[in-house]
View 1 (spheres, rainbow, N blue to C red):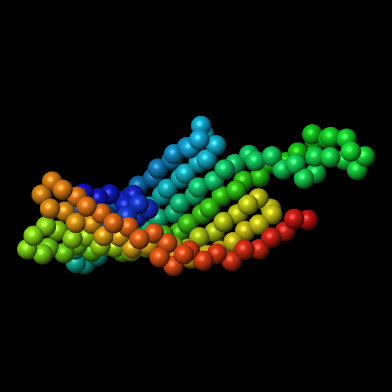
View 2: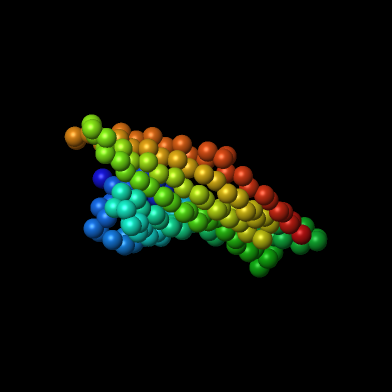
Length: 166
């Protein structure tokens, strides 16, 4: 029904973790595009005093590492100097605070939840930003059927950038 990674995909799924399971901890690593992009996830979740509610905290990193910085590749005389070649990373980091709750109407079961995200983006030594965002999720379970909806970036995930190309 739900697991700790629900905070990243649909926060309503956190309410599907049984309260008797107590503290849930999860970690995940995935590589995309033949290992060029790397996705890392670490999270934990706890039930609240009411067995119908759960909170979670997640950390996410999605980045591309070892990008060649060719800005200083050429010397003043136009020759190429590979000793000047440096590497940098472009990565997004997110801290996600999640809340989820379930309710039991007469038919089926509803789960709903939300995320508050703090986002940090870094593009090597050139640029970085801080931002925030909101997500909302809903799930409906009836028998063997599961339906879900997610409103990602409800606040359009505002970011304030600063640049430095010197």
